[in-house]
Amino acid sequence: MLFFGVVFFIGCDEYISKFPITERPNSEISSELLGRWVSIGICNESYTICNYPTTKIELLEWGNMEYLLLLGDDRAVDSKIPYKLWSSKINKINYLNLYPLQQERRDSKYFILKYRIKDDFLEVKPLRLRNKLVKRFDIKLDFKNYIKENQIEFDGFFDEGGPVFYRWESLNWKLINELSISNIISIKNDGKLVDKDSMLNEFDKYHLLESKPSKQDYKPSTSYLIESMDGDTFKILKTNNTLYDIRDDKWYAKIREN
Image 1: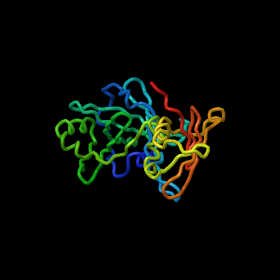
Image 2: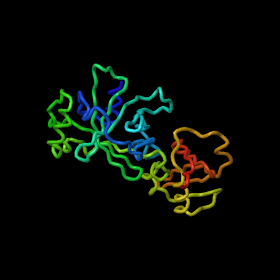
Image 3: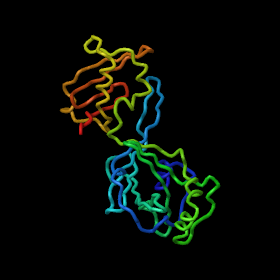
Image 4: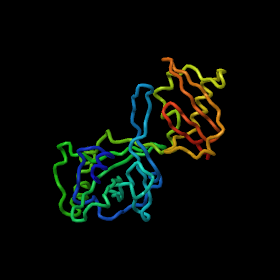
């Protein structure tokens, strides 16, 4: 189950190492990595095309040099798959060691990653086999020494098409619905046309929620009827703090201003 989770997270054909690059963390936590992240996939249904949240991860501090990575869809910590994560710095380049906490200690396995963050966008690059990295490192420090001497070659083994994640707070209405926005021709409130661009900009101030808010958060509400080029219509219910997209049964909360 643990390794099924890793495959779901970073894909297949990953390099599995008997040892981490370095046994103990040697750099501080990067605060920009902390928080809740989600990847989005495309759902193509008969009534809509949308971006839909798929894999969810959460990165928490474990001491001041390591991370606890939780992989799963549920809010409860005990229902998520836990991993220990720490960085290994070689020649000023940071790599990440991923270690499933619930695996048997005698059967220790490590997954090696790199990452890139830009604003609220996280790209993860797993180390792949690809029939290239055939050498196995069965002695402690062998992995680190190999990287120090062959870093350009080693960096070429990371997958350029790794998974991409967004911070939950950045999943606004526009991002989730970007594939269908160009199909919208009119928006009405109480039967009267409203300015489409202004209204779409207003919807963008709301980010996706994982679950339905409490009743006091979404009543009373203003109803907007949206019509698309293909003749379909759907409603959005809006308050000061919430947005409910009836079309795909998604709830959004008002983005907090800094």
